[in-house]
Length: 170
Image 1 (cartoon, helix red, strand yellow):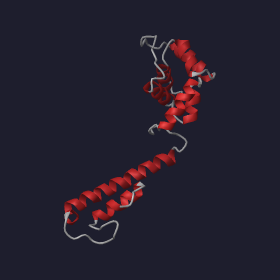
Image 2: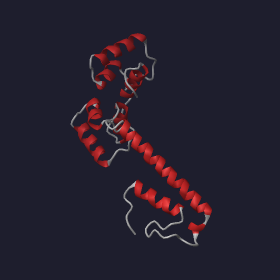
Image 3: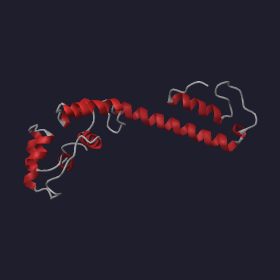
Image 4: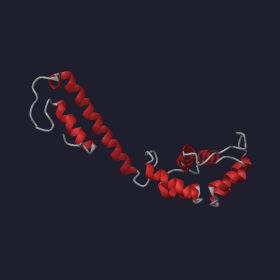
């Protein structure tokens, strides 16, 4: 049997099966499960679902080809991220290199055991003066790590507040 390499090939096979046709020989199947209308209907629905998934994936890649946000991390990316963390890259540098959000980088570093964050503020509320200072720091190009240290908060907390203030997308 041939190896099915792409979603398009799988979709063709399922479409053929939904019509009661052997996808590899092109011959109409008589008898067996493929003759059952319920099986054909289920396969037809599956083919439609594959087509819809293919369209969504294409729309996602077309609309935002410059980002990897919401895409699964590969083993190679994780190895690169680990090396960058060892070399002291900033979160911003890693986010730019991997075309991912700051939050995505911090989350992956945490999952990999490369970043353990405590929020020394203990979850205290943000004050207006602190938000104004954060806005100035962000506008001035201060690094995320520096903003976190300056405010005694975790990087996740800084990202969340910057997003709430409309300065970044989270």
